[in-house]
Image 1: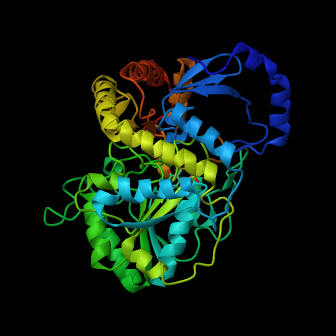
Image 2: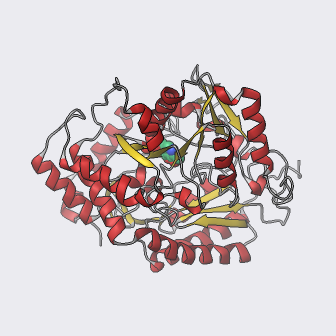
Length: 486
Ligand code: PLP
């Protein structure tokens, strides 16, 4: 059911909207000339609706964030209720909504894992990462931070500095030349990169599981240890790591996170667990670290699914050990919007929904179904080399259909988006899926992301898969010159 009535749609002058949008908004990913205006008039559950009346299945939950679907009624009602009570309250004051949201996270969701002390709220995932970096540096009094190739942690200065995808570092990319403008000072001083655990195409040339030393330690973990020892463990505040690469879009091998955590503990370095995309049920657990037995973080960054993207929100959970240090001091910082009562009401409603509806379990069951449908594509389609996923976060690895196993975009995750964009199969597939009624937000060129809302249905998954199958058939027909063909 669409949430947009004809009367609503016609009440807006969409030609005027186009003119204002084209003239006054600062758009991303395209030059002003390249921009193509497209407006969404409303959203509803798994669907978005365009101004021409087209309805599209939102098969990546916006940006992997509308976990409860668009306009979830329970969250909506909580927002309306809070708006009726509060305009604004700054974080020096408490509200019932903020206390409830904090209790739900620390006690209900994380209590059984026995590590979490307190949470502080932000307005986005990037700010959460920024805040986690600040806390790690304050608590350890150390200057260095380790991130990983192909990691994504956000767009603010510190978070951007952790970016392991060079094309996404906030750069300006020229359309008519190869010119790239990079923001000075990014990455910031003290940030170092360890190899990505990307086994499908290992950046340090290994093959899983033959890469393991003594049939145990992964080669990328050995490299991380080498980096730690080279820098000096007592100079490193934290290793920042997403359990699953959400924008880089791949799933590390099962033992990776356990080994990363053992290493950080052994060397006394904090682990900042970036769960901005993977948190709140997305991967079939409340948080993705819970897939690895015995693993718990020191700091955890939250965002997106914390409020099913109904309002801007993020947060940082601090371990009890971190809180022991922080609690002894006056923390001289404030954010105008931290703990905003209306946002907190939405966060609390979202988490209560997630707990009562057993959303992580549901994501696991639906993920099994989605995985089996994607595996059918992998088994039958020459452009799909591999699929991997957890819960409702899936990656589809794309290769040329000629059996060579070659990628369409050879630079893959190192590519820069200037000049004539080299052909991106994931963008091509997104375009073809849209013609078939399905919207996909893509990231790396050779890997497609699939991640419907956590309360989707098997019927909607079937819709998405059929669109994808048709789009893949088109991809197989595209004639792009392969590298081996010169
Ligand atoms: N961290 C991760 C893992 C993300 O996936 C994202 C966004 O995609 C962020 C941080 C940044 O979040 P936001 O866009 O809310 O600032």
